[in-house]
Amino acid sequence: ITPRIDGTVVAVEVDDTDEVRAGQVLVRLDAADARLALQRASAALAQAVREVRVLQAQDGSYDAQVKARRADVERLRAELIKAEGDAARRAKLQATGAISDEDIRHAEVARDAARSALAAAVSAQAAAQQQAVANLALSDGTRIDSHPNVKRAAAALREAFLTLRRTELRAPMAGQIARRTVQVGQRVAAGATLMTLIPLDQVGRASCRERV
Image (cartoon, rainbow, N blue to C red; front, side, top):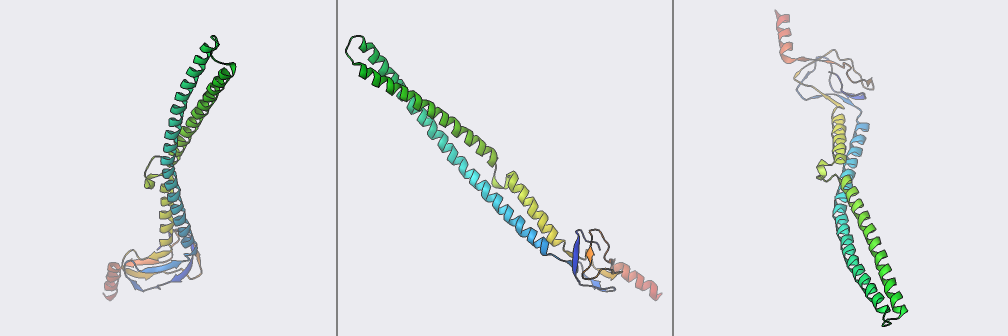
């Protein structure tokens, strides 16, 4: 019987010649650190799930922002076309004296303002698209349980759970304990032999030979 992890022995439940059933606990290692690691891994998984949910919720928000910025661009482009047309018409009328210089300046100011507004809207649309793409890369466009961060956290949780289970050394089969060397308080290393478990059928054959 060998532990799969290092640890300090806190209980030895059997002694030499004891008969045990399959699955019976033979030795317990200090599980305090393993329990704490399991709690941390569980919290880390929950945090990873929450973060991915936020990212996926933001996907929709960023998509809506991209659509809104696109609508702004279309509206402002139409306004610029109107402002340019208005300025051009006033410029033609200026030659006939049918319009004042002040009206011309107002039309040109409106046209220039429309150009600036459209340029700003185009920049805002590009920024929204970049943000949407960046967020999609973070959310990975997958289900929550398939996201790399969640998968890593889940794997860490499984490992922590296995480590906690390994603080209890159980009998792999029914048998009789022999050559027990482990003591309470002893620090043991993974792979160290703590005792021997003789299968019951071998114990029976040995008893028969002794009687013969």
